[in-house]
Length: 398
Image: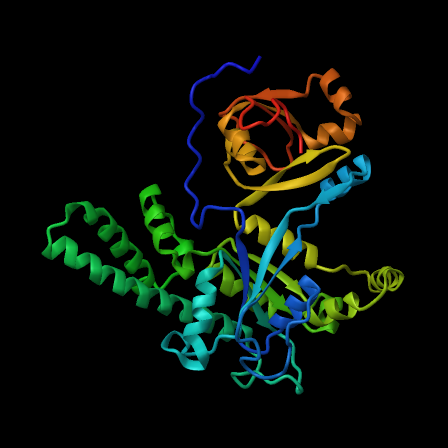
């Protein structure tokens, strides 16, 4: 029997951003900071990485599997016929330059590409290289951070002013009272951008204000991970004169944001080695690649997680947004699973790994039957039961 209802579960907090699981992170920065080299290694593709501004005009899009030891364990345990990890969608966006919000350097096209993604990998350059020109003349990542921050903020202001002008006509001239709350919310957003000169994401917003933000999809409402591109030598030494200054800037302008030092040069060298060479290289230099950390945190920044379905036929990670309840998670597998939802039979991965089998988890009393108010947790192993419909069986495990 399905578990009895215990009343409504608390409503999940509103999230800033698009609703969905096919979300993407865009790689953003000035020209020649290592974006395309990073993209090439990250996605094992061959996007142009030439040494001149705007060599990437149309955004390169790809997807990369999200590394997860839990998924690897399940694949090794079940040895399934089919295995499907979670994927992170990544877009390589051409370099922005100062004045891009006014259209300089093909700025308008690039900014529209940034608006289309859901999260930002902001790449900043700290390495000196006479063969790789810097669009601003000399290397100064703090200045570069400020340029990108200002260009995206000014583009949001430009977009916001057009929306406020439209609503003002309705509210103040047309007497449209229904539009007043949205107008007030946009005015508050305008204060953040214009007077406080801060990104939208750095402020606290009410549930209604988040609805307004999600309606208009402002660039500066997107989550950002700062990727500090070091020279291969500095990465191996774990030292660079700019790291402290970059952290100071981020703490002031984007408190709590994640900073990940990496080296596109190191990753390219590492990528081109065979497996034995890679192992020897890492041991010799007492270091590791940061790509997995970058991918995992990019996925998390989009407010995504996943549950597992597993067996001899297939092991699959199913991406969902944080706060997703069991029926909606079931609907990711098939819409009929959501419509006819009865219960979710849930095992925690840690219990399965520790105890060694589904039967052992049941014997230990850790196999749970959850109802429609259950909020799925990252890494749950789930079997959904549902009322048969549209010719489907009454119990299915993918």
